[in-house]
Image 1 (cartoon, rainbow, N blue to C red):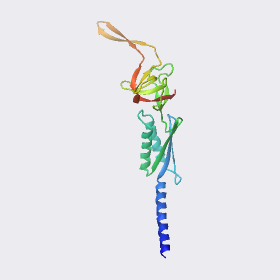
Image 2: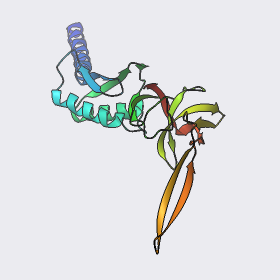
Image 3: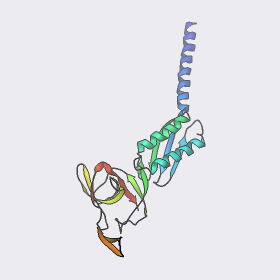
Image 4: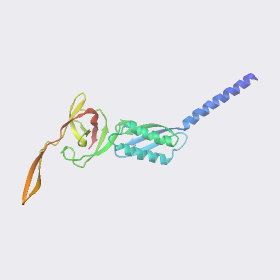
Length: 211
């Protein structure tokens, strides 16, 4: 009799453990974020159920918002996706997939100005891979304290800073005029030289991959 009770008790314990593990598995979900730097597609997978479509929609919108942010990272996108999954009572494992590999984050950008002619034209759309793995002569995007996001050719790499140069080496001249009164006009001529600059390494956002 005692052995039978022990067996029943063991079965109950095993059943409880199995049920607990199954309940935990039911709350787990695998999510992949696919992006080419311009678009985002989110796919969720679980062997037990089909995830709510609205959850995937919210995740795609959140990932797209993060994609265009210069300061976003793989970690920040994953955390945002996990947060949305948690709102639906899921624990998510998130993987980001791009043409550049697993957890490699590209972002879209647009050229503003003529400093990179003839390589890049004003208004041209480019794709930037966010990375610190760059080398001399790469075209990179970086944050400048005065001009914001800039795109330049990387020419020198020092231990804590980089030197960026414009491809366009032409010097431009432009003239302004000011009316002084009595029919007199004052003209001033200015010289616009290419923007070449030293910046801290951490200011480099990434390497231009598509242009």
